[in-house]
Length: 318
Image 1: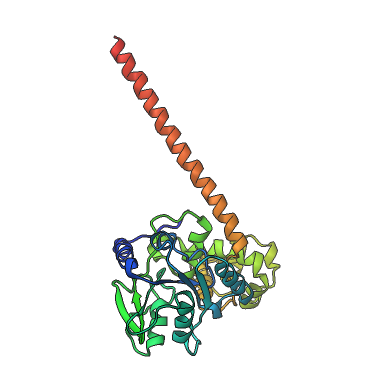
Image 2: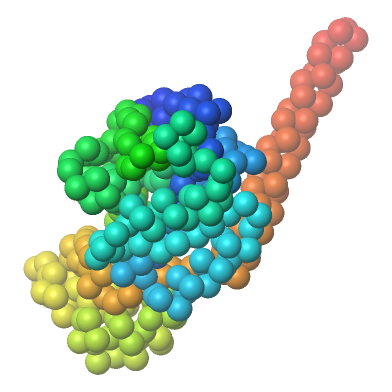
């Protein structure tokens, strides 16, 4: 199953970004530090091509610190790009953000030449919460459900620094399948667009390979986590947490909800669901599959057209 979710208001957000970016000096994209590439919107990259970019890896306190360093180095290696990590305990996020933007565009930032910055990100990445913490007042609506911010707003963070906020936005088609599952696991996708049990199984398949110790500790599992299939792992967690139905059967839906809730809260441990190298492989494989699907559709279309012409020629010959 591929995860897809693009409500109507996100199309409006796309148009708003396209219009606003013409007058912008720096584009900030907030990423989820637990899934930096999965939470990077390719539509944003297309709309803001050529603009200096600051990548904020938010929620880094929930992410694997070693992998966060890898991702920051990865983004800093790109041209006209800066990258920083932030979390809920940051003491002066505004200064950190402003300094990083000024590094990218040092000739702006005065009252007569304000630095105009656009901040964007996927739903539920913590953008509104960050803005509220930087301003010290509730200027942006914040929530733990995707799609809370619906309209653009301008915020003056400091003299000569204008921040334009935009609604959280996904993209029409998620090509990298694993990226879709990671987004769903993080809470960026609406519940009506995913099967929670399937998402939890995909999450456990990855955690069982890379964070087996954390899983065993969190759920008190006696089994060798790395040898369990994802279904067996979810069932074992369900039994340990009392998610049971009649007849000794595990309530797999309830067990899935427990796993997803724990992951989103950081209760399993500091986890990152992808590395730059893993993402490169997933992206290449997904692009190859997508190219094959397009070719197969085109071949089928050509075959139908050929049959139609043969049939038409047969009718005309009589």
